[in-house]
Length: 275
Image 1: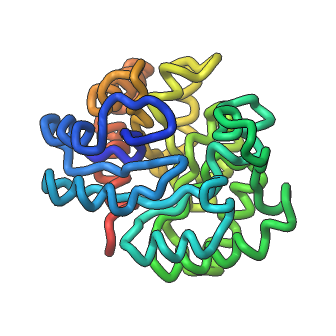
Image 2: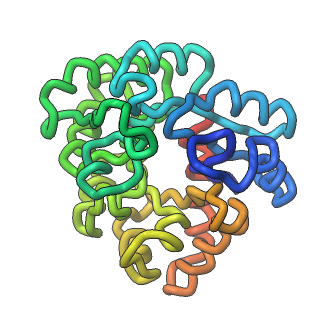
């Protein structure tokens, strides 16, 4: 098994455990590895340290939020140059996050600028830096993750990815509150060649989310489905148990368990592992 989305301490929000403690849960559960995500800190060095300590394949990257100045090619060059495997476009500081009233760093410290970020067609001013970021991702053969950006922005990123040699695209929980896409829209994203993520966090914490809804999303994703825990919160089971809960829940909706297991193991591991 391979979990492509998990959070750990240190973080600006309380977490279930630190990097090594979370890594130990995967080691104990027989996982091959995981992807360590931080909304407000690059996780490249942290991931490498856990990999050395546990022997697991652990990958990190950078999220393009306010702490790095948004869509900042310099931050991306530094993270990828240090061995990062993924660049998340704006997540907690995406414009969608503010519109939905979801937590941002500005909420914790209102003295910070109330900055949000986007790419075309929502924010045409984001085109030039976004193109530079895409070029860097392509050169590093890293994963382009769409963050919390809107559906039209996801389509724009998917359309530009091939121009930069990018064939590793992950649409981050598109059926979550942000961006809040339905199965038909998600099927269109899957048709572009990118992978579609569903997370346990949605199952446990997303208002209005049901197993039936997630099963419909999984069917829309087809072979491009990726299942991840997005765990690490103090009120969520430990990440391996959380991911198993998602698999069991979707299997109970009539989905093929072997397909679901692939979506939580070989598919995401191949997506993130260097060629």
